[in-house]
Length: 82
Image 1 (cartoon, helix red, strand yellow):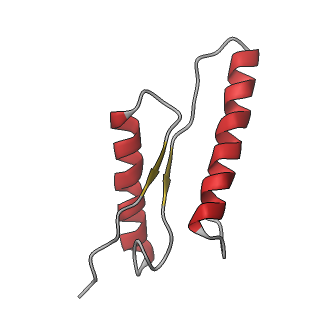
Image 2 (cartoon, rainbow, N blue to C red; image 1 turned 90 degrees about the vertical axis):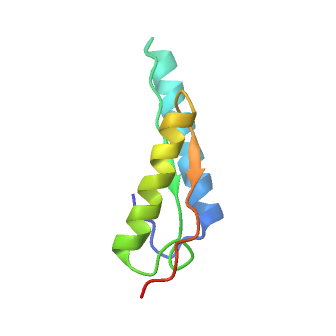
């Protein structure tokens, strides 16, 4: 999901609210289900859409492999493009 003109802290808050709502719904329906997010912001984590998405994909992959579910992972700063 892309949030235009949102700070990283705002995106973090939105992602946490979504996670809480999904968690409540899943538990209320007897399901074991969660969502994970990779968070970042431009230009800190990428100076083009492609480089930003690459860093976000890495953060999401890290979140999914290091945690059993429902985690947030922040992107690392992207190397400057040539």
